[in-house]
Length: 105
Image 1 (tube, rainbow, N blue to C red):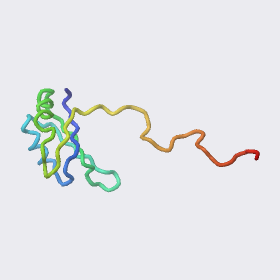
Image 2: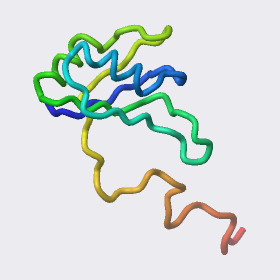
Image 3: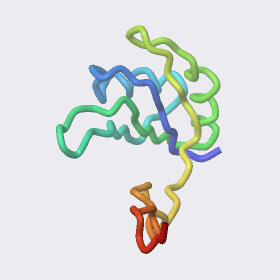
């Protein structure tokens, strides 16, 4: 189990201090990163919490996954590293359809 945790379904109104308090039940919180939308600056509903040890991270998952905070059940998991390369979707490429194009009737 890694030290960094992904926490989903977080109330939009929650603060860094509130998150530190909640996760301190499991141990020492190294950092909290509330993820915001680049365009609006509003929270996106998920955060990353870094615990000081693997054991504390495992304990946080065990005791806080499913915990209700402001009417929402937290989804706490080990954070997975971002995959390098790859695109984030888009419209595909290459030979994408078209009309007619040399058909004889």
